[in-house]
Length: 418
Image (cartoon, rainbow, N blue to C red):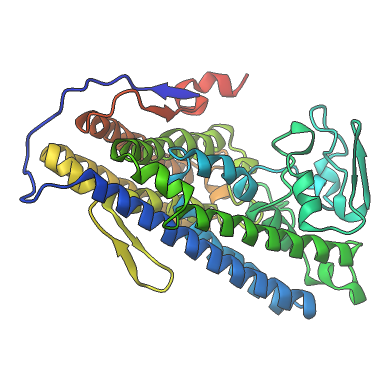
């Protein structure tokens, strides 16, 4: 759902104007530089994850499995910050489904608990279990999975035109490393044993094929991230699309910030699960890492707005920013937006700290957990409120007609229950 903003082209003025004029071209160049750094960090941490998976495969143990899980969690930190680039850049948005699609019907990939069920009225591939079957046939579609390769899992991704058939990306790897989280809104994440990857002491069956799938998924994730890094390099298509026309670049920036803040994060990823009290609606549902995914999405919004990104090695990429540009047009609005972004950061930090203190996100959204619900709602409220000021910034910068993503969970909550 789109929320269409047909805004006045009149500029808002007032407040303190910086001494030196801010050039829009410099702002969009900073934006592209931060994109490149963020995707480079996503790639390097995915490569570290692949190394950890290699060690798990060579010597399956709870220790090597734990190291692979830790590498996956570390890889999510820069990647989630890149999501501020999604909605304003078609190149990123069209690619994103290959690496971060969710939620997924995990029965497509591997064995599942009996409580998962055996069939779905909407998904013929609901429990085909690629790892257990070298020939996949359903609904007239036949796929040879004798050897599980990157090409094979790529062909299975969203097979049958069903978005829940997620076969590739971070969440497929997450499921393989953790297994299902069968705890509902009680404590605990997935608990797959390391022996699921040990052909000599195999649990879960088909351990060699599970290893094939895990390594293929990691290899494919690296290839996909290499593609996106190339798109933001000096001669890359994504960089050219935002720096070739500064106004188009500013439009991409604010479309991405407003859409992630409102429709995607506040709506689809947070409010929907809270309304339904449904742990299946949490983003990193197998690992109980959802608090970090939400937190680093917000950090990514701040990176773009303030024109500063801290890399995984501690260095910074920074330059002229949207914040500078808004301050030049309307100092009071710039202060308002900074204050609202800080309020949301405080709320997200509280959510993150609560999870790190022992109450996972899926517990926070559980029915009857009034205190946990309130912590999540505070973060949602902050995201919605900052979006209102982003809309004012769009007007101040004379960027009319921008479309921001909406969400039924925010705009028409009754529809969620129909």
